Image (cartoon, rainbow, N blue to C red; front, side, top):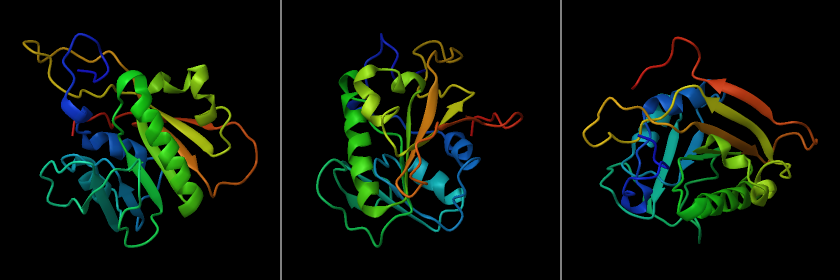
Length: 204
């Protein structure tokens, strides 16, 4: 089911592990070969492992809590302080916790933009497809010169099984939003892309 649908008890700390196909969809538009990526809300490590499969040479995995992922490098709050990164990452990729009315996700965008302003590279966040529609978020999207694209997922992510109805499908759409500090400093329309490609809609 969709993690933002009403009528369901929310999972503590918004721990909704991301299926591997969602990273594969992102990899259709970003070449991860030999990149160092920071997964800053790694949870149980599914996204970190999928990033490795996509070709990353190093995935630095952090989270505010230890969920038992053996590959987690550090317990770290992405919204404050500085992690013990082995070097500057090429990009930051995560499915951020949403929080009440999306405020925690907004805080992740703000923190991510601050970090790529310092580190360079790109920021890729998995968010509800319509997250960029609110006027209160213009500073992150239409008014943000670092926004470079949006990847609309043509398949809905099923975050958990419906109690008693395992075949029920989620109702919400998701998208990858992409920002980059080292993109050409030219005001232009962000790219709108689509994934997965036809024939690649697997549940893995």
